[in-house]
Image (cartoon, rainbow, N blue to C red; front, side, top):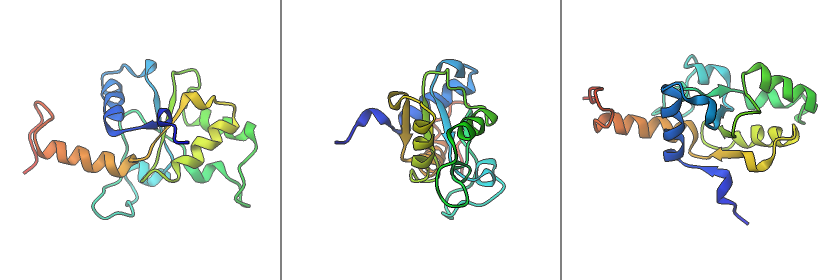
Length: 153
């Protein structure tokens, strides 16, 4: 059966990113982005031409491809834990939201976290992911919803 408690939506992410921008990130859920490093850092293009690469403020990059070995199976649990720690993911914070470009490869990172012993009740998936975030942020900026930021022409 569908469990809505493991899904996050745009408005949920918007609140978390807002707290990250204010430096209040220690008591919020973390956003872990499963896209390749270049797309996360804005140095490689997104596969959708209307979407620019980059990331949500405060997100951590843990590429889904780092979760699996050459044979396509998950790496050993100890190795997965080291990858998450190296990328700055803090398992002591309230929870973790997995994201990616469109909500698909985020599930690879989500399950890797389950394998490391993270309680499923602490994990969630933002299926709108970077594509929805980018497009809706552009829309809101165009509509002038960013306070003192000028609206885009």
